[in-house]
Image 1 (cartoon, rainbow, N blue to C red):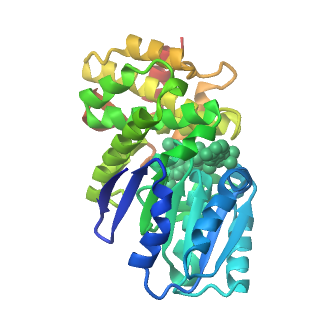
Image 2: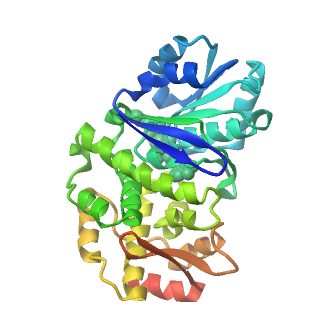
Length: 359
Ligand code: NAD
Ligand code: ZN
């Protein structure tokens, strides 16, 4: 079990990673939370079936009353309706400003429960208990929110958790598609960090064959990268945008496919490949693109954009992305692993690059 501390301008909190670290939850609550009135555990239907009772029993070992709210598994739960239903339930259960929310699940539950915590009575504390590999990314950094019918993650807040408990034993039950999806974000973190983390990952031939301790190690290292960036730029005024590597095109592919058709990580993987290829052209560097592409392919990631998606539709999605500015598209590029640069492109410049890359 390892602990690292996230420090932002507004907060400081521990991220604990390792098998069985969940067992530290009752002690953490007793030591760190005085005068806690109530706990609301929020989870999704799949995670509830697998681990809901286990976590509830642990919480029952604390002196605090606990209630539980279960949402349907899946992205559609990051909605206004779910958000309001949980707020209503929290009011009915008489949660107050001294209450605590615990998010048990992947990024969907973390974002939704975190947003409830950010807004209920103008903000109450919450703890993240991530259960997917992807959530090594989403549970850390305090971005919380829900989707709007007109766009993903359009409504939200910055609200840091008071702790993240990443029990790596949860990952055992994760379907392989979800494991791969989360691995894409680990790869992203490695490219942002530098050569040695990247080389460690590239030696992995099969994500499912990773043993528990190796998995815990790469999760920890991924979180370290995120922690460092968020610590320097909590509200995305500058370098936090580096975390968008692979996401500008990735989000466009995800939206054009229709959410749920390709996993977030699969879309990010394709987006990263494009970003690497573009980086090689723009900076005239060698990022070993061909080798990386074949590694991605061997891990099961898609390495091309599905033919039925039109370049012009992808580009218009990229322009309307909330991270693009004044009609220009910001792309996170890599000069070499660990050295990141954001470059702006016009729609027509990027259309040319994307079309030639897709040929
Ligand atoms: P998810 O929460 O939907 O989980 C994926 C699936 O795995 C779900 O069906 C879930 O029920 C199931 N599951 C979860 N844990 C399991 C386990 N241990 N065993 C078996 N099944 C399990 O999706 P996700 O990929 O974790 O997160 C995606 C979300 O995260 C998106 O909404 C994205 O916008 C958000 N996100 C947020 C941030 C952030 O900084 N806040 C960063 C990245 C992604
Ligand atoms: Zn992502």
